[in-house]
Image (tube, rainbow, N blue to C red; front, side):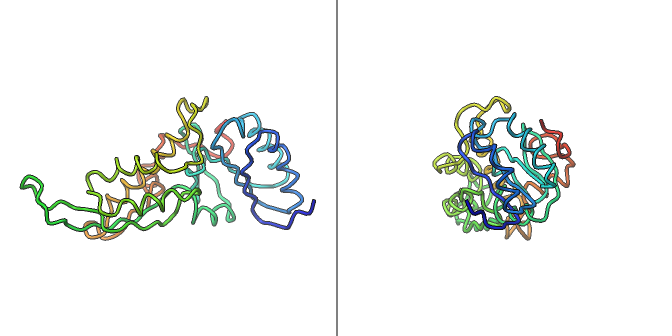
Length: 231
């Protein structure tokens, strides 16, 4: 089978048996980087991830295994509620556009006073700066138009639940909860951060959870480890 040359391989196999062929595909393509998201542990078990990491490292290939896929940023990804740092130009370029959602939210007063405390704000527009790989962030941003700011984070969670998320609903053994729940948390966090820096109030859009990590010194999931330290 002919495999065209590529700099980056995106692995989205839905069988643990398929994953063992990934190093061969990467070698034949001459790729220098691999993104192999774990949205279902049955499709890419931790034991296989460990093997792939060793095989790909021997080929001189950078590999990341975001769990879930929408935890990927240009510099890190989540595994077991911890963040793994990496540096790779090919993966970083992909993650500029797809990965952990980053939104810009604009608001306006609705003209309705909330129990005399001031003008109630509604979201007038949501723009996606980085979409989730499945397109969920774009769908959520569109639906948030007209939603009260105070209700936006909760509503984002509901909109995410209605979207066909790539992550499994079963409890992940390494996480202790479902990956779709972890994905929902990332979407709600993206909306929360965007609201904190919304236009018309803070003078710009928030830089997303990645920017928050830089300020606090730890990731939103609670920790930070270097490459290779997550399994």
